[in-house]
Each structure stands twice: as structure tokens, then as C-alpha cells.
Length: 144
Image (cartoon, rainbow, N blue to C red; front, side, top):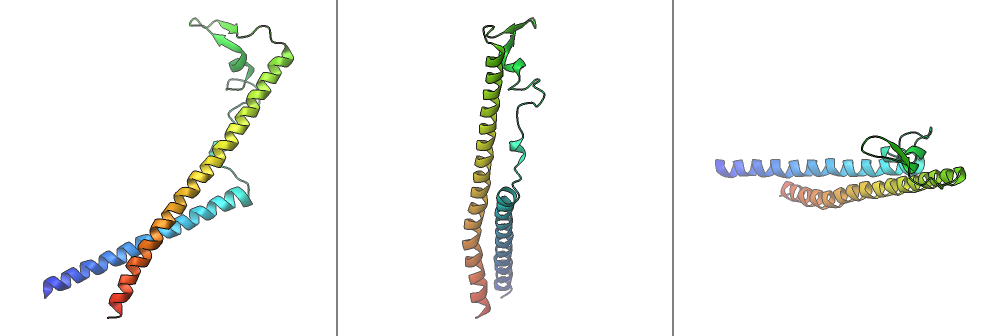
């Protein structure tokens, strides 16, 4: 009889534990989804991937004149990549790079939102049936 009681206690602990974990996962998924909606669509605040990868001052990053128009050899000597470009053409090349960087950042932001939302949706879709199944067993045993 003691063995049956032990199994019953372990079973009850398991059922309540899985139910509690399911509730926690459900809460995390709902809070995470609401966070995405509020952050992105109500307040318009984007994640760290929205930080621009080009400079304001035009120095040292992917869309600066230095990185787009010049190259360095192994000795550190600077060479102009295309010396035939006019000042206006150089400016246009930098502006084109900035535009592409902005488009890439927007795409990265949109994709990150989709990945995050898919993760929270998957958590929700897994936790719901686990919760209802285990809670149903608990209620059925309580009604006996």
C-alpha cells in the first residue's frame, strides 16, 4: 500500500509541475509577443540591429569614402581604387552605400521581429496542449 501511495505522490508532483511549467511558458510567450507588438508597432522602438553601420562623420566604416574609394597594400600605402571618379560620383557612391545599409538594416529588423514572434508562437502552441492535457488529468483525478 505504501508503494502505491508513493507512486501517487510522485504522479501528482509530476502533473502539477508540468502544469506549472506550462503556465510559465505560456506567460513568457504572451509577454514576449506583447513586447514585440508594443515595441515595434506602438512605440516604434527597434532593437540593437537597427543601429546604422555607417558613420555620421564619414570616417572608418563601411560607407565612408575611405573604405569605399581607397585600398591599402601590404606596406600600408594608400591607393585610390578608381581615380577617374569625380567628386560628385564619389559622393553618389557613398550615398548609394548608405541607402543599401539602411535597406539592409530595415530587412534585418523585420526578420528579427519575425524570428522572435515565431519563437513565442511556437512556445505558446506547445505549452497550450501540455497545460490542458495535464490539468485535465488533475481535475479528473480530483473528481474521483
